[in-house]
Length: 291
Image 1: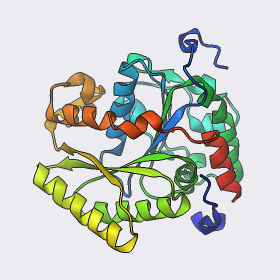
Image 2: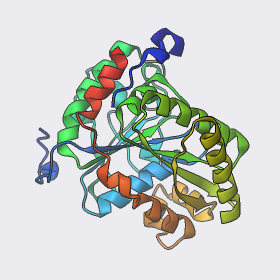
Image 3: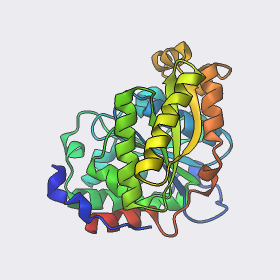
Image 4: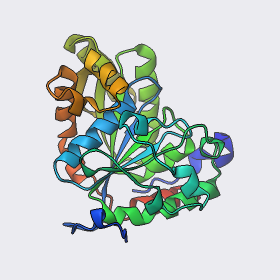
C-alpha cells in the first residue's frame, strides 16, 4: 500500500542491437514527457498514444512506456499484441530490449501488462529493479512518452519527482478537475521545477473547456501561487471512439477530424522539444525511491 512507502519522504530531485534502432542520435539521453491524470476516463492513454505516433511521424525515435499498473491499454489503441510487458522486465524474465514492440511510424513501446498483480502494488525494490532495467533505453531514443495510470500511485510519484515535463490531461467535470489539481499540487511539491501543461480533453465546446481551465488556474494561483500552462483542448469527437474500435490512433484513422487536429497542436507543445533532465531520468527516479 502507498503508506508503507512514506511518500512525503521522497526528495525533490530535480545498446540496442536491433538494426531498426541503429540510426545515429543527435545527442545523448532521451527527453521524457509524463502523461498523467487525476482520475480515470479522461482519455489520457488516447492522448499518449497519439502524441507518440505524431512525434514518431516527424522522424523522432520514440518510446512509449505504458505504466498503467496492470491495466494497460495503449497496445490495444495501437493495434499491437506484445509478447512481453513491464511485469516480465521487472521480474527479470526478459530485458527491456526484448519487451519492445514496434508500432506505427516506427515508434516502439513497452506494454504495462493486463491483470498482472505484481504491477499493481510493486515494492520499492521491485520498482528499483524495473527502473534499472529500463535505464539503457534512454540512450537509444529521442523521446520517451510515459503513460501513467490515473491517480498517484507510487510509481507515478517517483516518475514525477524525476521528470522535467508533464502533460496533465483532464476533463471539464468537477471531479476530474479536483483530482487533477491534487496531482498537480503533489507533483509540484515534489519537483518545483517541473513544467506542466494542462490539456482539457473531451470538451463539448471551447467555452466549456475554457471555463474548466479558468477554474483550475484560479484555484492553483490562489492556493499554490502558480499554475500550469494551458496547452489546448480536445473536443468530444465520435472519430475518437471509432479509432478505438479500429485500434488505430485517431491522428492516423481520421487526421482531418477536429480531435486529431487538436491533438496535433498539443503534440507541438514546445517544452516537449526540451524535456531533458540534467541527468538520467531513471537514475533520478531510483533516487526518488530511496528518498
